[in-house]
Image: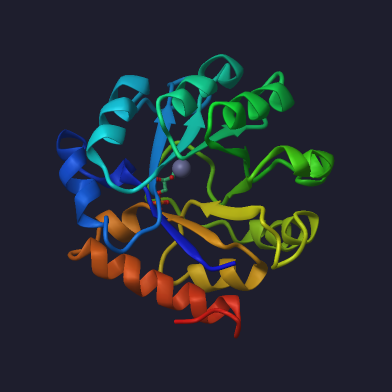
Length: 226
Ligand code: DX5
Ligand code: ZN
């Protein structure tokens, strides 16, 4: 498994999303889109119509992070629209198994997310039902928050639960991931890194992605080229 970078457009210019996506198209692996409904989190961003348009204009696959209530109702629509990955929150899903299966059936990778205060162990038996586990490293809702080091032991336990470093199940971290914190995440076992303000707040977002990748790859271990 190689490390992957998923810039979050939450800190990009929402009126120029296609251009902002293009800026990182040659250096990133995914474009992370934070869908917030003003209920599950105290912030409101974009929904399916904007994601549908972005899918048409962006060359990177879209990584949809749904911070919404009733993901069981809404998540399959994002997969049907052509998102490459759709992640739902365990705290919000009433029927996570059915919803994760519906996401996969619609042709997308299925992700399960948990907040900093949510334990990973209760979801260990669902490992066969998702392609990626997202561990929030801030409370969800806003970009630019400080990374919560208290999540690091959970990243280590999650890495064991998904089957070690050769697992086909990806382990994503999201929130406060910067040049200062990304190495700690990779050492703990994360392999997919969301970065919002560290990329779109940088003078050169593409260079920021390349720098983050280098630091993560070095920390991930000797098997990682680059
Ligand atoms: C926060 C979002 C993140 C956010 C990360 O709830 O899920 O994806 O964009 O932004 P930074 O990297 O600035 O913490
Ligand atoms: Zn996110």
